[in-house]
Image 1 (cartoon, protein in one colour):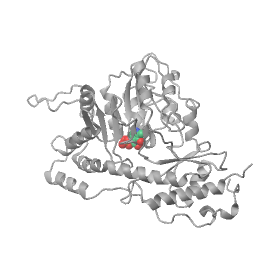
Image 2 (spheres, protein in one colour; image 1 turned 90 degrees about the vertical axis):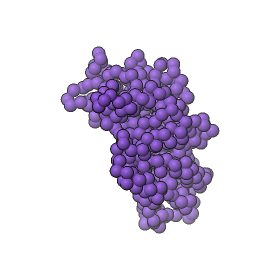
Image 3 (tube, rainbow, N blue to C red; image 1 turned 180 degrees about the vertical axis):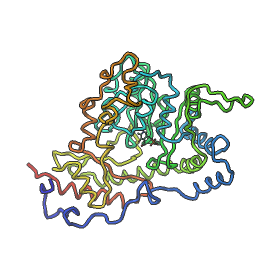
Image 4 (cartoon, rainbow, N blue to C red; image 1 turned 45 degrees about the vertical axis):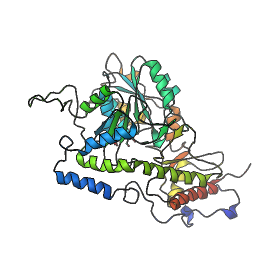
Length: 436
Ligand SMILES: Cc1ncc(COP(=O)(O)O)c(C=O)c1O
């Protein structure tokens, strides 16, 4: 495809992939190194306090409890439960719900495994609904099409830092008596119609893994307004053991639970990071704004959707291109940008989740087909065939996708933003089709 060039060739710069000078020769700050993260004196001070206290476990320490309290204040919710990962946070949320094996939970096929693994761990069936091509988030109409008599919950994923249409999803949930869990792993502090994501559904879940808006290396937070749900999530994350209830040394395990306790070391880092979160998000929005401004008017390039309703946090910056204007495919665009020194990437795994081997085999627990053949269901009743969610399949198929991601993090400078945009412009100009 690289031969196809058009518009005023004299003004087009030679691509780095063809031997030209790359737009960028220095590495970018990334979320995996000190340049792209703001970890420093504040985290060290709190970590030192933990080490000096000798209390590394949350049940004897103070930092995780403080993190839960400050997080609840920041989000204006009743209670939060800290855990070991975003996956654990979602598992604790599902564990708090009155779910029975064989129940169905509707979610998106474009997400991390951490969204769906816990559904299966609870013996429930993940049901995949298609997404909105503009936002990559669940399409509420498609969600409603998937509701059956066995549906109990929706997990709405705010993907890539972009908020879902939560009101429309809540409306579906209300009409069908479903619980809503918001998966905010990629979208901490994003807002939908002015409200923080995570605070609108029954439960909200966050990840503090290395790549997320704030990090403790790994970690998770579940939030809820309803005291009963929050208490059940807390029990689920700590062996079903209500430690506040002292019974003369007797242990009481009230409900099923696992050990998903966050350590004091994570709690210390989390507290320091939480205080910085608003500045990180403001910075991400600034970087994204600069890229969008610089890309304005570049033929064939579509910047992330802006609306009065959605206030995204740009976990990554999503670029979409118009194949009617640009004669290029997604893998070539990404490869060409990488040669220009820009770490562009595809969106998620290049495949919707239900096409993964595990769903094709429908085997989660050893050689059994549980829960797919449980509660009167036949294994084939559960549909994970290609074609199930055509929009999501197209968006994640490199040969048909028209989008890719640029990095966005709190360590990026204005120059970084400008250079990313200039590289996209350079590549787009190279591949512009001749006017008809
Ligand atoms: C949308 C989404 N949900 C859940 C998770 C799971 O989080 P963790 O990796 O912390 O378990 C992730 C992590 O990448 C995610 O992006």
